[in-house]
Amino acid sequence: MSIEENLNNVEADLKERKITLVAVSKTKPVEDIQTAYNVGVRDFGENKVQEFMKKQPLLPDDIRWHLIGHLQRNKVKYIVGKVYLIHSLDSIRLLNELERRYSAKKLTANTLIQINIGREESKTGIYVDDLERLIGACEKCTSVKVKGLMAVIPKGDEESCRHYFKEMKSIFEDLKKREFKNISMDILSMGMTHDYKIAIEEGSTLVRVGEGIFGKRNYNK
Image (cartoon, rainbow, N blue to C red; front, side, top):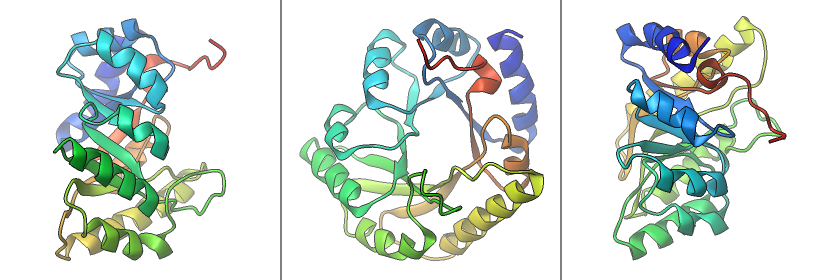
């Protein structure tokens, strides 16, 4: 199916619940992003800063860019003022670098705390045990705002997916009941191409869909 047809199918799943769709365009050419833009998509997700930097100047200014991959501290300087939302705040060291770079430009970094909910060594994100410490550090910032949580859950069957999504939703709701400085629980970013329907049922407010829109990725290009 075409990008347009895929988008129609995905958006039909999201429409009634008012879920934000981020079209994950990593490894995909500018032409594919423009096609999705032309049919109404404005939120696009990239994993790597270097790839984002190549694409961003070639595309419309009103695109809302989401950085959804691991963000290295030495790459922060390249994204200041260019990224709508950083999904992968996962350490106090990264937080401090974001605070330093954004405050120097008198700008605000909008972020999501990435939680490694499955405690997988192969994935980034903080463990739940470290969440309070990171929250405490976020409250001391002036140029970094936390807008919610993000997770990439372990691959598994529907029961396994629901377990991790429920756990994330529970953490999200618990934090929502509390009052913080610089922190609000507006966004719960969870669910990708193969599990976004389950994620929506379990409370996701934002899904990140790549292959379901653009087709299989070719990492050899």
